[in-house]
Image 1 (cartoon, rainbow, N blue to C red):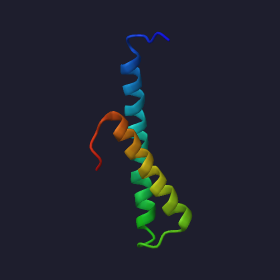
Image 2 (cartoon, one colour):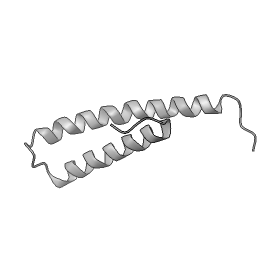
Image 3 (cartoon, rainbow, N blue to C red):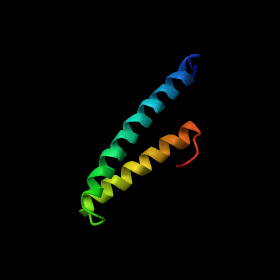
Length: 67
């Protein structure tokens, strides 16, 4: 299959958009988890961990070092 010359740039832009979304989600969830002083509901903790994993996956795809 033939790829257009803009495909890599388009893919990178998509990943950068996903990066911003997941970073924002992690910040929001981190604040929500913090309100429970170290004992958040399981569903909230799970959602936070899942979102962090998604963020790391996007960072890896972009070639960034894990934070």
